[in-house]
Image 1 (tube, rainbow, N blue to C red):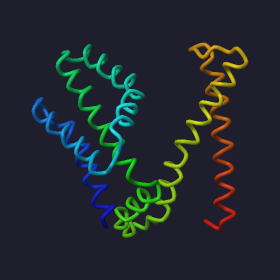
Image 2: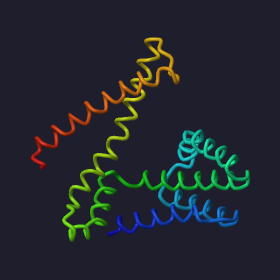
Image 3: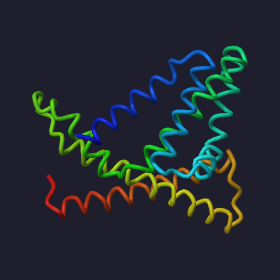
Length: 186
């Protein structure tokens, strides 16, 4: 029950950040994020490194919003993205994939009324979240192999790189399917 409440609070909190319109409220949210990190013993330095990794995405969003709206709105969107990424990092450091999948299963229990099996949803969520680090590793290995072979990673070679990545992903999915079937899951 604790995990479910924590998950719902996280989802509501992260969503409400985007509805905040003034800087004082964003400052309060920032302080709440810092307090949450201190309470849950999440390293502030690691959180800053995580935000730094995400900075190209955030900057791209800010630039696009500068063209679509004004620069003040674009900066507010950037700050909101930083706050959401920060609280997401804090949440992810304090929960496991299994806990998240189990929480979503509990939240999907009412779907039994329309004959949707929450156990299937739990398995799909667990597999999906577990595949993210695997896909990241596959991409890094492919990138290193291209560099070793002297292949530039640019727009011209995107088709080659994506094809190899897709083949690798499909092999992983096939292995996963065989493992699930072997364990007797229908």
